[in-house]
Length: 103
Length: 171
Image 1: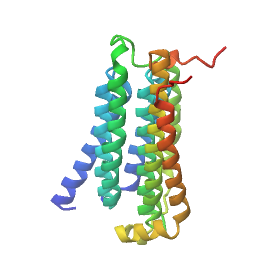
Image 2: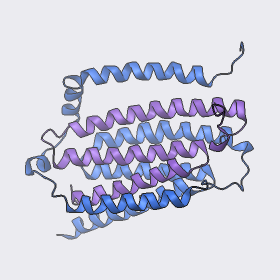
Image 3: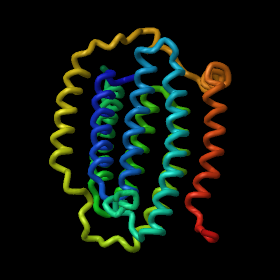
Image 4: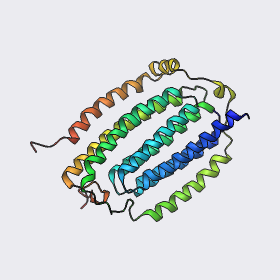
């Protein structure tokens, strides 16, 4: 730990905001998935940094981060499969075209 | 503070700044392939930050799984779907202004809170080193149940992704 804790936290807060912006504002569904990866990475960095500074068991944060990485990979796989399935039926990956369930 | 420590710290700040710039590119660039490459830069920079907090094994996992697997998957999906996208469509939707206002309010609440809180940083946690052995032992003893559940989940995802993405021949 060469930098103070707050600097890591501010960095990951800014990265989280960028991810939230991407999730809310992107038109392309794959762009939304990219933004979700940004959010998960910001959270992972927080988990690891907290486990290095304020936790009594230093492994905990890293193990949580492993689980988050595994779940992010699973989410990316299923999300991209859904995007491909929608692309096949709608010929588009733009979010505003995804109105099959709207009436 | 000696010269080496100063160089390492300034390098870390430069890496954080570049990662934020790349993150901005990842969520605003019109060409999705470029934003995928920006995401790759962010992921590598975060792996570097993991090394700087003494989580070398996690940095390796990050490079292997995120940069190696997830990013490849994303770039595959981009290349499979990019054909029909008109390049002149905007990257973001019409709600940008409300989203930006909400995010600025969010940051205005969180940043002062982060800076003002006195985090209970303990000297023992700062001195502790996490070896791969202790990680593996924790994963196999305390966290054995979530570990097994993750295995089942990954199996389900393996089947589910194939089922969702394949062509419906008999439907």
